[in-house]
Image (cartoon, rainbow, N blue to C red; front, side, top):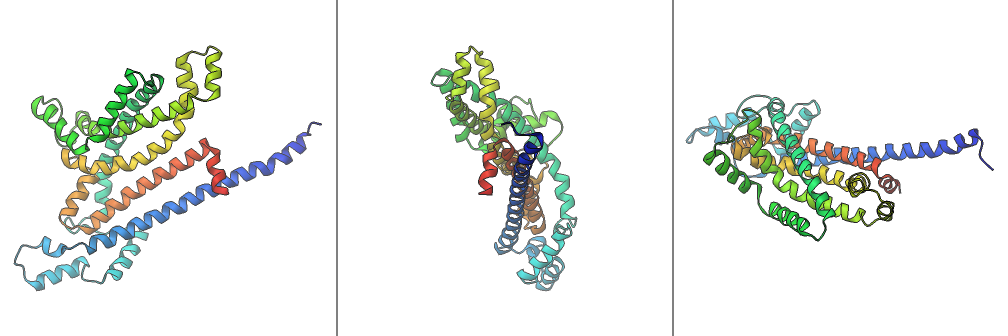
Length: 331
């Protein structure tokens, strides 16, 4: 006997509420984990920087400076206080959005990081776009031609890409296309042409990893029964690959892309040094050389926050694409 509209609504109401509650609990759980990770990164960064040998006050003063002058600078910088006192002060300022002031530049750290973040994010965005635009077609082609020459050639290229370090690729590109050919700028951010070499340097390893991910996901999906059914019905091969197979194979790719954001941000530090790119990587490396604690802390906290937020967003998107993730969290 068919259920009345009232019965259907009543029966569906608790189920819909349970699903919404499951999504909310899943997001809340991931949010709490993200906050815990950020706090852990903050604590580790703070104590590691101060336990490493080296006195910022002595580095800032000329050699042979009197001990009384050094002690005065330590008091001015706040490094003369015990570590617990410094940590409590740092957390107090952090709760109010204050990351401190740079030892060297005497400017708010937050302002320095905010000024440098757009250049790094722009480089990361162009890198991700290039990597995805190249890796997805190559991965689909490799899966469609599995075991053939095209597949083997693409796998060989991806293996080479994963084997070469980014700094070596960057130096090689500078020698070939900046020193010898003079096609692209070697340093700085002077316009669109300046993005070419740093983007290729960062994307080379990323493309190799994404190609293998797309290929493996496509190979698994192409063995499913509904793909065989579509082929038996005479559906064109291109439509099967792009509309049926890739749609389901793209779910693991979402997670991999979220993880690769950390790789891009971490790799940007080295690439920015090679190309003198005015981003957070170059800012952090210069601060490390001079033991500028507040700047290093600010960069690490901001980069970690961006990375955690991206992964939180990926987890939420993945939960909507794959409801079994939410069910696993509830159980």
